[in-house]
Image (cartoon, rainbow, N blue to C red):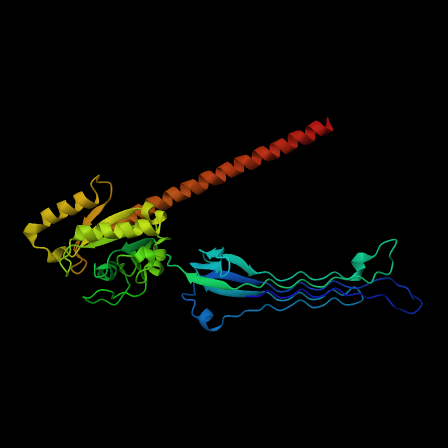
Length: 362
């Protein structure tokens, strides 16, 4: 990305009949165009930026005589999907996070225009020949990353039944098969409870041990969970390789902790899936052992479901909707309280100013 260069200032003098020494009249150069990024909810991918990688805004025009200022360069507006994170490739600094529709960020500033000799006139220098050059536009190499924007993220090892779950409760249709690593990229599904009550759920590809160190596609998948408000830890009650569900669940939690403390602090509910594959007489013992091992204090919501038969899935969905509704109400209360505090603070500052003015007058 590159902002446009500023136009140069002009060194010019007024020359007319009967006015041989009319004085300086050089105009300023125009500013260069800037490059802006804007979040657009109608765009879903960054595919356009895979093929077009260079964007240069127009430069400003040079100043001219007769006090003519150069025309400013036109800005470039790049529309990107909501959820795009823009970072500087060299420093790693996060420049912008387009987390909402219409959010706008300056990614490459245009250069300022130069000054014409009109600005350098003084009583001792009535015919200045000084002028300044326009500044170069800002030049940056950027990385664009689209993070999934979802309320709920499904977390689990490959073949835990996450794709089947999201199919059962939403309009998403991910590829489903009875072998690991079916899902190779995140899928989003909208779960609608009522006409105006819905939430977005993300099917994150299954993790493997060592994901926190980047094994498999660990880093690429784990970072999609950072924006979610709630994690559903989906556990396979009947693994095809007959491994212990408890040990696999503990291993996944360890991977979360290695990758990010923030993810560990997120609300995480436990969903035991594929209960239809567990014999009826063994279910109580299995659930008791899982609950005791994974949630000994009993602080996490705990569900036993079968996504394939949709048994218990609606109970999970209704609990999520209630949780998110309470979370949104709390966020609204906090915003209102913050607005009230800001209003009181501004009122107090205004009264202090009035008092000070009154004292001065007195």
